[in-house]
Image (tube, rainbow, N blue to C red; front, side, top):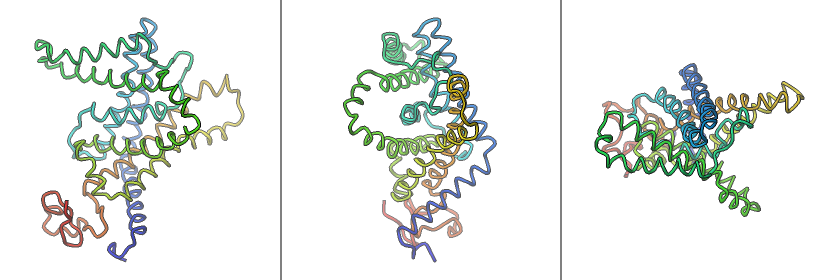
Length: 336
């Protein structure tokens, strides 16, 4: 049965199956490199947190400053994972990708779910020292363009990016743990399930798709075109798949508990919970990146994304489909 004769439900099911196959093919082709990058990213993130703990022993402000770079350490390797699977795209601006990634990072409890040593890894909250670091990073970033002797140096671009990472990450982390945020959460307790469901089912999946698109060089203003090319049904189905994959770390945790059996919480589970949490979440992120990469590739037109759209075998002249960025469907141009 040709795609033009499929019902909308059948077409969406076929598209989802093709998307999963594409993600599986990417996983099978690149899994050694992707798995190594995933664990390298979580190791870098945990190492940054540990370094922040050591720096906080000297001065709490120093620890806050170092801690702000933990999300960037993880995002850097995730960017490399996307580049491995989609190497032909242009490089993105790191801080642009950091914006949706911070939403994921905070919403999923820093991915690994547990501190390796809760007694030595206090959460960053908006105290005087943290506020001082945040304000200082913003002021330095704002003043740098006014100081030509510094701003024109070859290394100034890295300093500007570092300051942007610092204030953006610190702002996100402190807002999430600010007493006002907790007060609002307490007031919304009767309907908190609505917000948590919307966060995990809608906002986080959309943020993952945004990270994948931006990581491969898509202009932020062009991201709505991804949904248009792929279609809303497949986008919603991909978001649902992301929600399901996000549950894999929890499933692995339950399997590990079942295998290891009843153990003492203080002497056995507490020391291992951080390590297991990081490993399980690393596996979940590994699978998520493959799924999102398949979606981004689909949205770029590398695969047929609309019912009746022609595949590469039908492109007789080899010049791509459409004209002026427009898609072809059943031999006709689709209006933009």
